[in-house]
Length: 430
Ligand code: SAJ
Image 1 (tube, rainbow, N blue to C red):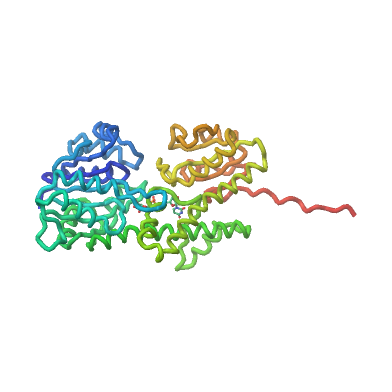
Image 2: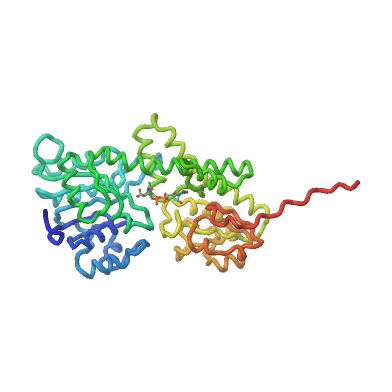
């Protein structure tokens, strides 16, 4: 096996997964080239900076760039190991789009040589790694590829990323990895690579099982959040506090209900379950319904907030948070963003947005009249507040600063909020 300093690695895609992965590998001493199609991303990384918010990533990137073990380029170069970490979006009708993965494989094929390893980390529909293999075989008939009878010149494997935004650097190292080879030999080759920087267990399997495992993990979480969101709808209807119900139910030794919210966002859990539904539509009524329940929660929150706004015409409302979850700057598929934009389109300049991770309002607010403001101003000027993200900043507001406000708290962070007293019973003159 090559010493770490002799190993060369190319990571394709310098996004939320690719950049931290490239930096962690570069920290072992391996020579890492991060390839991205966006020149500004490449420039930022080469200057030792980061274009995404992630705990401790800036210090790590500046360190490995200064040491010379990480550099970025828009152009690929030869290497021993290629890691594909590009997006796998879905189309409007929820069909997976693996175009970026296939383009990455095409790029790799141009520089691939005997003995190299290609690892796909992007969340992908079952069978994608085999498609990567087929494409490489077609583009490079001079190389033998795995799973086709003969001894292969290159190893190809699937190893899904499983890290949680906000904890990426920790989880990249601590989490167990599932490594699916096109053949057992491919899996062993990829295993040797991950052992260089992963402290969690590295478990090998075949590529298809690893692909489905990743989709199953995110669908599991989506279904469980949908359960919590459905309970919140029932509780609203019954006039019961869902947070209390969940807290009490979770005292049962075998019950662990997740938290309701304004819906499910991010580019993983809101997307990946559809890959299972697209592959087996007849077999996935539960997974599909969970997606619809979680998406439907956005409409429910918009209707709840709109009712509050309609009840007090002209009064400004503060929407707290745009990110898809707490303490991150990622607004992809964010239910908080969807709710705020819907309210801004309907209520215009009555809507004030508070988002510590935004320096300007996203384009979706253009022409609505909504304004970005800071938390203190919102607390001073907005009698209505809609909590959409559980950022630490919002959690820090004590009850004294919320007295007298009407609050729709979709995250359950201000459970100590005094409730409006019920109207006194009507006394009929005798
Ligand atoms: N959410 C709730 N209630 C909860 C938990 C989450 O409403 O109890 C919401 C969040 O607010 C957010 C969405 O769900 O909008 C997703 O957040 P998350 O923290 O559950 O997950 P992600 O998308 O940040 O990361 C997930 C993780 N997958 C699992 O936990 C199974 C992560 O490990 C994956 O690596 C990541 O997807 C990915 O890249 O696939």
